[in-house]
Amino acid sequence: MGYVITPPPAASLPVRGSQDLFPVHRIYCVGRNYAAHAIEMGHDPDRDEPFFFQKNPDCLVTGGGAFPYPPRSEDVHHEIELVVALASGGRDIPLGEALGHVYGYAVGLDMTRRDLQADCKKMGRPWEIGKAFENSAPCGDLVPAAEIGHPDQGAIWLKVNGELRQQGDLNQLIWKVPEMISYLSGLFELTAGDLIMSGTPAGVGPVARGDDLHGHIDGIGELAAKVV
Image 1 (cartoon, one colour):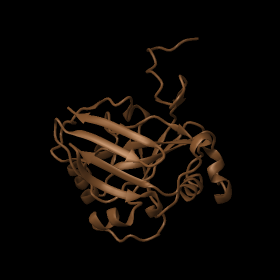
Image 2: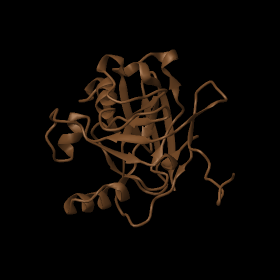
Image 3: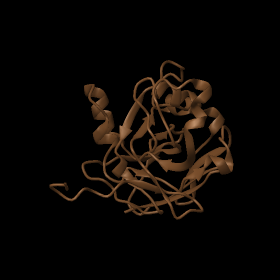
Image 4: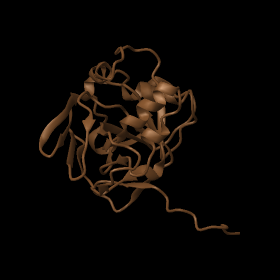
């Protein structure tokens, strides 16, 4: 028994130091998870319940590929983020067991059509057109936790054309990685292949065609993308 149309290729991420690929199931994103970013977006940096939105697996761009400036927008922003990749999942994962489900980490960008997202917010509509458009999730190579452990501090930054735009530290996350995994597993059944984009530090801003983006997280690696 076959398919009535050719199935699309499976989304995946490269793994540093390996020829094997990490298959991607879903991409969950945490909103406003750094206090300074919450403030710059006009919100209180509190610890009320976290909220999540999703990107599609085929939003990923790997290998330092180009980011095509998307249509229907004149205000596209960069958001540098720690990406968490799960090797296993489940429901209602206890906080103390959460890190045991992590395969590894990567540097990612949550590219955002800010003007379209703002319109959605005003009308109380979902954010997908501002967040889940094609090529909106550039991502670097995954680094296995077996090699680097579970980073909970270290610089995270993004430069645009060599100019520092975003800067923070992983220890500034409002909801830490184990908390994100545990809480999210109460809403969804997490599975192997899920990614969690953990939020962005302050300094988000617009990009333009021709811009070179260079992201970094201490102990994890680099990410490069060019806006075309």
